[in-house]
Length: 360
Image (cartoon, rainbow, N blue to C red):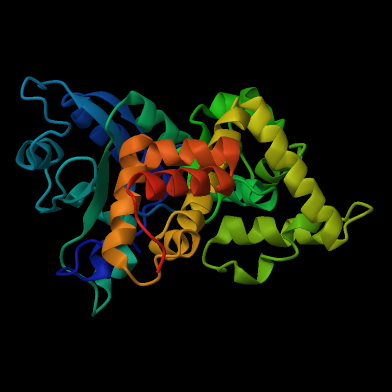
C-alpha cells in the first residue's frame, strides 16, 4: 500500500493501482505538472509489476521562476493536482499529495470499498521530488528507473570497491573523504562495460535486466557471497537478482584474496580512467604531512628537543617563533614533506638559540 507519508489517513485509503489506471493517471498528473515546471520526468517503472503504489515525479526549474526559488509554492501544486491533502517539504525535497480517486475509477477497487472495514475515501499518492537542476534530475531519473536496478548497480559497484548512487560514482577510502569519480551515467556505464543503448530501449522482464547487469565486465557471481544474507526479501527485484547471481556457476579463482586483489585493481583503474589518480596521491601526501606534523610539532616534542622540560611558557615562545619564521603550520607542513622531522627540529633549535633560552 502507498500512503505512508499521510499518518493521519489509513494506509487502505491508498490502494495499489492496476496498470491501466496507473498509466492514465500518470499522464493526467504529468500534464498538470508540466504546466508548472520546465523539466518533468517519471522514472521508468520496474517490469512485471502487477500493480503500482505511489505516482512519482521528478521536477526542476519552475516556469514562473522570477523569485529564484527552486520549487513551485505547494498551494499552487496542490490546486493543479486537485489534491485534498499535502505533506509539504520546502526546497530540494519530496512533497506528497493525496488526490481523491473519482467515482468513475472506484470500480477498480470494488472489493475493498464494499468490505465492512474498507475506507470511505480513496486517494492517489503523488510524490513530487524537486531537483536543484537538470543534471541532478537526470541522475535521479537514471538511478530510480526500472525498479531496483539502481540498487543492483550500486551492489555491483560495491563489490569492486566503489560506490554508486544518485550523485554518481565515488571512490571510498575511509576514514578519508569520498572522492567523486564521475556524475555522468554514460561515462559510468561505459566504464562498467554496460550498453546504455540497451538501457534506453527498456526492459520487459526481470531476466532482461539481470542479463544486462551480468554483461558488465565487473559482474562475477563470486562477489555476491558476502552480502546476500543482508538482502531484504521485500525488495523483490533486488532479492531475486541476488538469488539469481548466487545460482550461477562461479568463475575459477574466486578465493577471498583473489576477490580482494581484483577489487584493488578496479579501484586503481577507476582513478586512472576518471583522472583522479593525482588528486588522490596529492591528498595522501598532504594527509601524511599533517600526521607527521602532528607527531613532530607539539609541545612535548619541542620540550624534549630543547631540554626546556615543563617550562611551558618558554616552549610556547619557541613554537610561536618557529611558526612566525616559517609561514605558520602550512609552511611547517611543507618542511615536513621535503625534509622530514629533522627539518622541524633544526628550526626549533635555531629559534631556541636565537631567543637565548637555556635548557633546564
